[in-house]
Amino acid sequence: MKLVIAGGFGVGKTTAVASISEITPLTTEALMTTASVKVDDTADTPDKTTTTVALDFGCLTVDNAMKLYLFGTPGQDRFGFMWNDIARGALGALIVVDSRRLQDGYPAVDYFERLNMPFVVAVNLFNGSLHHDLDAVRWALAIHSGVPVVAFDARDKFSVRDALLVLLRQALAAVRSRRKARNAEYDAQPVSSWNEQDPAQGAAR
Image (tube, rainbow, N blue to C red; front, side, top):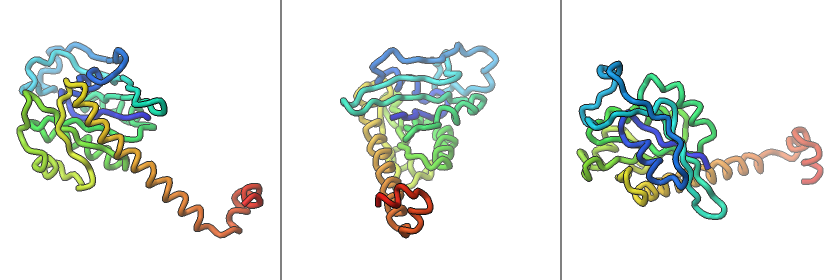
């Protein structure tokens, strides 16, 4: 399963991928230069010296039948063109947000809503605490009641695992729902339409 870890600049996407990946993660970190001073807001992340310029990649084996491929997006608007390629073929997205900068989460929420892709909002515990509680985060980001909002620590392997498990349940539920809808649509077709679409299939039926 391909999953996306998305969000704004400096919210902890690269850290989350690195924390949970069973392989040495692929990163495309570049040093931040003076050219980004007026572009990237590091007021809440003063120790940040690098930034993702393409993607992050890691993987995690869930069991013998399932392996997760994790693709992290770049956070800055100027690298937004990468998102379409990264999201292609994914079954769900973990949107990481910083409760001190909720406005940075709007673009990611809008993006995955437009794609109609299952997602979970994961609020990163910077300094071990939340600036706003989860209900306030849901309200501020105008997130539908069916979308889980969880708190997690991107530095902690097991905390990232728990957030991904919530996303995994969302993604698998969406797959089952789409499959059920397709089967219902197929069963509702008259026998004549089966013969027209696929004579061999119609005859076998």
